[in-house]
Length: 259
Image (cartoon, rainbow, N blue to C red; front, top):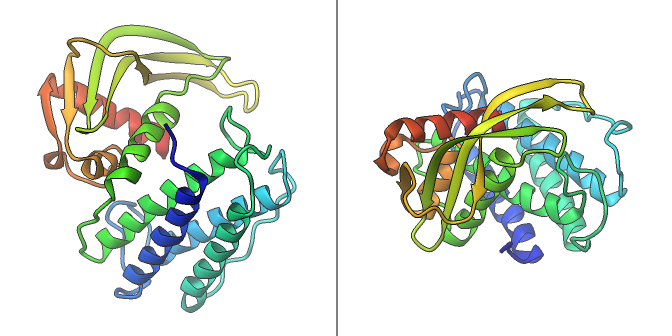
């Protein structure tokens, strides 16, 4: 079950504020270990662009991004103030919007509720990136982390579009966060996107009903599991029972789905 809209918009606000606070303790030119090739400045500008984009999509009720005009990147000294302004605008717009408002998203779910949820977790993960760059061990509140695990498993990793074919491999994985559990069926997704024309032939893992004896069970606290699935926590942060190779496969599927 999803969180209330106000909880998502509150998370966008709080997580972005934490990111800004962490960024102020380090140099904008410092590297971000969890985002190879990016500096702190690159990360801050990325989230600024993302928040500006979705604020415009929702505020203008756009059903396509084709007419959106990308903003120009300011100098590094103005980036944090720019992110704060983008965050404030996005939070104000989302707070004044019903989740069922139709708007463009890259998902089959075309409404503002999808944007609210996605932007809460976008801010959370990039806050973790910034804290890792600052030498801080990120901590994620359990309630938001459980929702984040559900999002990445159900939407980022396991959403097979209608135009694709899923071929079952028979291999199963359990994800145990203590207060909630998910079971996944590993398989192969093939097909051609009618939107982009791109051909796909890739490993996926779809959420299924409870599996009595999965081939592997990955367990940990909600916060660590959420960060691990996003590649922001090491393998030692979670426990794997059964076939370790399936945990490695799931991480590779997550990398492919979220890059």
